[in-house]
Length: 300
Length: 265
Picture: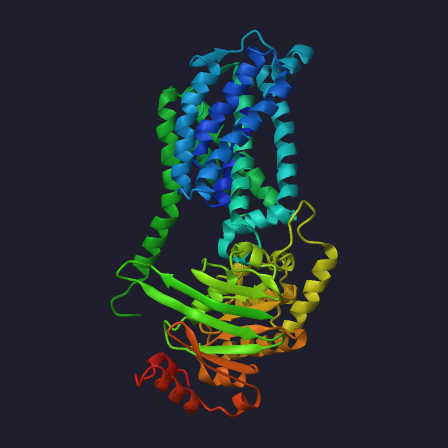
């Protein structure tokens, strides 16, 4: 049980990198970017091929995962900002095309990494700790680094302009910012993180699968809302990022628990969707109830 | 300072909703001119300001600011020269960001934004000082989200942001129209004060005839996408609301001045 729990925490942290990517587009830019499903799998496929076919250093392969994700984000961004295709549709187009591209990249629908080195096997081989603990340690280091970098970046002039783009586009344009560029940049950074997460998951699970990214965006949204519910409304930016990662960990722990209770893993997607739908619907429902109960025909 | 030459703009060209918003409009502004702009609905006042700011491309003509031809420059590049305050108090500030962050964004208007920290310590001191002068109590709430402020406070802040880095031209598009009379007066006083202090060239669209007469050194009236009346200096000082209404009736061919203009005085 404890091992399973630790595995879930490790998964939560590694997927947390993706959740941070989703956070950038969904929360900061106010765009639900559906590229996520495709760029997550893309990052994973590229990672697997680099390691298996090209015998690449697994750490270096992760750089390629990140670049792969960034390219996917760039394409969605270009479709959205240059050709003015609605962001959701632009994301779907990239996501769909990536499925075919991923198949081309791998040449088959999945690639096992059983005998190859990964960043996790380095740690497990040298210290003898379990794969789950290695995931928690390495994932923890990576996620802390990413939170620090994001905290720094979004505090810079450029990062502030990017946040302002999501907040009030007309204003920041009137202040001299090319919002097409800031949106494009946000999509590139976001999908870079998502691609990196895809690579990390592939190395941790030791196989790459064409369908690995299906539903990634919903997992990302679920993690964000779970984080918000648990941590509550926080002001500081780094705490908001941390809250998204905690949401991710909790999501995978819940997943681990319901699977232990015998739920079919395939039913997990409907559970995720219900969590997100509920989280988005509850505030609306409670507001409506409040409005209705506040009404009095006598006008008192 | 500003030269508008033969600028035209037609919306929805070739459709049943075709609307000639600007019709070979020409206007010349001297440095330090503070022009109030009046005219009925659809006269082209806001369109003119939007064309100068580059919100939409123009169909023809030229717009030159301080010797630079900006006719075909994108909106975000023109921001280097132009400070703007909008009618909607929500539009000029970023609700989800702090007061000091908003000011820091405005302080870098028109400059390239890199990877240095978005707001420096020395800046914060400066902002605090400027906000103290506003006398709205904002200097103690520097890290509050702008969304928590009232419409009047947000509009005052927008005005401050538009002029934080001295613009070559300040565009005010009915920036007090959405405020209650008392707050509107306060924002208007502040506008005059800032324009005066920085010796700015400014254009202010208004529906309030008294404001149009009392503020600035020049007044223009627009009708059907053109300037039909342009008065400045001593001549403007002698004008009365009745004169403007008569002028407006003449221009619109005896048509009665629209009720919004009537109500405004």
